[in-house]
Structures are given as structure tokens and as C-alpha cells.
Length: 271
Ligand SMILES: NC(=O)c1ccc[n+]([C@@H]2O[C@H](COP(=O)([O-])OP(=O)(O)OC[C@H]3O[C@@H](n4cnc5c(N)ncnc54)[C@H](OP(=O)(O)O)[C@@H]3O)[C@@H](O)[C@H]2O)c1
Image (tube, rainbow, N blue to C red; front, side):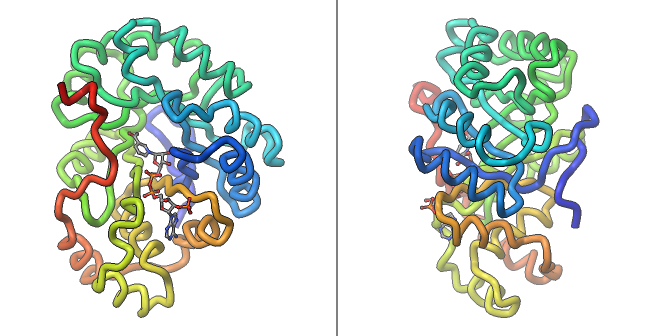
């Protein structure tokens, strides 16, 4: 299996990345260095994670040349409402200490704002300061709206996706429209790791249930960004390219879906 995919604008994105939500500054910095030695090249942060400076420091000292690192960050909801998208982007760049990011995402589709946000992101993309632009947490309706009213088709939709929350209709829609799907919370923050079905499959391959869950996601055609700040887990989560689940196992894991969300929808979007 390849370890990178080609996005709809021709750039390459690693299939595996390190998620950095809730990674405190020192942990984020150290985890990036450790992960880089284990073969991770993609690092996922967001302005709302409040660790962009530490992520920037981690990237600067991780030993990989800038062109071999893939950095994702995201614009938060309040910046979309205020309407200063370019300012928010420039502040993220400054905090990261970079002159471009590889992927800039709309973190959540703020109703009434996301189309205007996207139009500014298109300008950022054309300026070269983001090598690709994409979205996160968008449903089929919001993606169609964007594609109807804007010029650039999102390169990526980052959504929660794991055996307990298999958002298959949105996955199919994205795949049919050339939008790469990146799975966040791919371990459901631990919620499926004691599943007996996953344990049975894990035993067969001499793997962990985390590895089986991540592998199932890869075989669905998605990319994954599990978070860990521990070397043993970083290694474990990266060893998912050298075994293959069969059709029966894939179907058995499909059956675990219970529409369980590990990540909350932000409160400002529930009002
Ligand atoms: N776009 C969005 O709205 C959005 C939302 C949520 C997350 N994300 C992104 O997706 C990334 C991943 O999601 P997530 O951090 O929410 O959840 P996750 O990756 O599903 O789970 C992370 C949790 O699992 C633990 N863990 C990691 N590897 C493990 C293993 N092999 N065995 C047992 N436990 C393990 C980690 O602990 P340790 O660190 O202590 O190892 C951490 O507590 C985030 O970090 C963030 O970058 C995006």
C-alpha cells in the first residue's frame, strides 16, 4: 500500500499523520520529533488547539527538511464570523513560524459564513501560502453548496470516522467528487479498543485493536491522523501498512457502527 495519496490539485499528502489536539506545548514538540523518526511526515494542528507555536518549534527541530513535512492547520469559527480570514491565516503562519502551510482547513461549517470564508481561502491558495485548501466536518449539503458557488473544489474533508462512527454516505460522496477524506479521532479516543470483535481480528494478525481499527479506515480509502504523545503508541499507530483485513473482517467491523461521536460538536454551532 502507498503511504501517500495525490490530492485533487496534484500535491501529495501522507496517508498517516500525527494529530495534535490536546497535546500540551512540550508534549507536542517532543511528539513531533519522535514521530518524525518513526516515519510520520504529516502534523495536524488548528488555531483552536492553542499549540501552533509549539508545533512550529517541533517541526523546526524534528530533523526533516520543510519540503518533506506536511503541515495542516485550521480556521476557527469566531474568525469566520468576524470575517478576517486572511488575518487569522497570517496569525497561524506566524505562530507556526512558517511561510506556507500544506493544507488550510475550515474547521467547522459556520452557517452563513463558510462560503465567504472559502472565497478568501481560494485567494490564499492562489497566493501559494497554502498548497491546498479543504474543509472539516462538512456534510453533503455543505460540500455541494461550496462546489456550486465557489471555484476551487476542497482537496480534503476531515471528518470523524472510526468503527463506531462510520460516516459512509459522506465518505462515498467525497470519494465520488475527488475530495480526499481524512479520519479524525480514528481511535474514537479509545472507545472501541476493547471490542471483542476487534480483539478476535487483532489476535489473528498479532496486532492491537488500535492497529486493526486504523487499518480498517485505510482500507475504506481514508487517511488517518491518530494522536499520541507516547513513543510506543506512535510506533504502534504507524505499523498499519503491512497487513490486510479480508472482506469478512471488513464487513464485521462495518457492523460495529453505532453513530457514536467521540468529539463534540462545538457549542456555538448547537445554538
Ligand atoms: N477537525 C476536527 O474537528 C477534529 C476534531 C477532533 C480531532 N481532530 C484531529 O484528529 C486528531 C486525532 O483525534 P483525537 O486526538 O481526538 O483522538 P484519537 O486519535 O482517536 O485518540 C487519541 C487518544 O487515544 C490515545 N491513544 C493513542 N494511540 C493509542 C493506542 N495505540 N492505544 C491506546 N490509546 C491510544 C491517546 O493518548 P496518548 O496521547 O496519551 O497516547 C489519546 O488519548 C486530533 O489530535 C486532531 O489533530 C480534528
